[in-house]
Image (cartoon, rainbow, N blue to C red; front, side, top):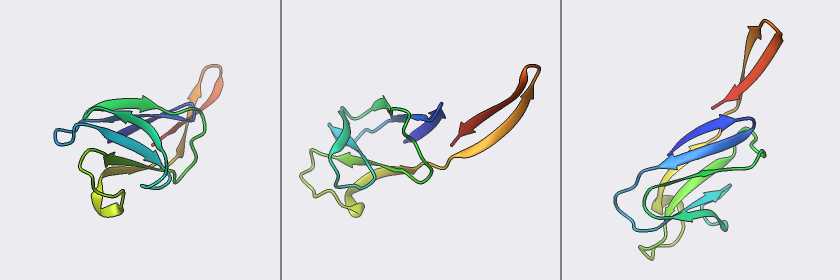
Length: 96
């Protein structure tokens, strides 16, 4: 999975060739799904991102329990601030 932070929202994209259906879970691998798609997909969160939030990509068709061992991928959000100067003043941009 790859994540991009825009205005405190994250866009996630994932390619997957194995499972037919995958879910994205937020905060823990066994929480209710944030998104459910085919093997490849993308989703954008609301503007509620904070440093350290973890997204888990889970295979839901294999019948295996949602556990760290059965997680296809995970992304940990790391928010940093980059300051750049513009003609109209300082602009701050966050990214992961």
